Figure 1 (cartoon, one colour):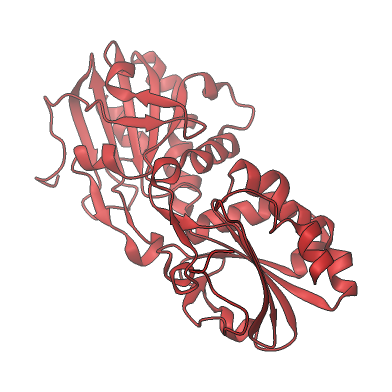
Figure 2: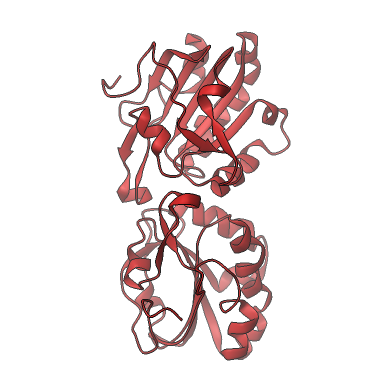
Length: 166
Length: 166
């Protein structure tokens, strides 16, 4: 765990993110204010690890999370809202998971910056991106954090690991 | 026509862009060095105007362009290479156009900056993006420019207009 990232006991910031289009604002602090939620951060929509293992793992294990009382999932990426919408549509297809999972855009990285979870991804992505992470949030407060020490691997933030610890 | 954008007679810069993945470098100056090409700039992969009218127009009119001697088309966006690949796959589907059209990523905006065609799109996209444009290039030199005065509309750079002037 990096010392610079959001820690247990912190509140989720109310920095605005966007769903589906740049005009549709979402306040994640309000979304997670009640109940048990999981926020999943990814380096890039449509990038291989994010698209083939990390996020699909949570979709696959949705029932397991539901059984532990988690029914709200938020995938956040430093991409624009058109891209996160297209990516969500591609990953969810016609699965029932769509009712529980929102794909959110943090186009300027402001939300992720407030979590202290940005890293310099200029070489691959041209800008700063989100480290790969998962946060367990209960009634608006972070209760467990899973932040990849190398920013991009799918190990501690892997859905199987998160589910076991949830 | 804005006075700040690339003009007729200019050479296409050799600033590196990327195709399909961040490791796959493309030098557009070399790609357009011979023959008649069209470079199409768009504000955002998966954004409505880019996805529903601007780029599809060129795909639809490919035969018309071919008859005028154009056989190489390059769509450039300030997005990362994973996003431009996914977008190209979504737009091209199983059309034969894929053999002639390359979707290229300019993740940091460096190529577009060298064309003087960036604009501040922070509000929608979180960063600077490419103005919407089309450039006709013959043997590496720009012979006609079609740059949207308001950055994002599909009017002067519309495929029908470009084809008529080509």
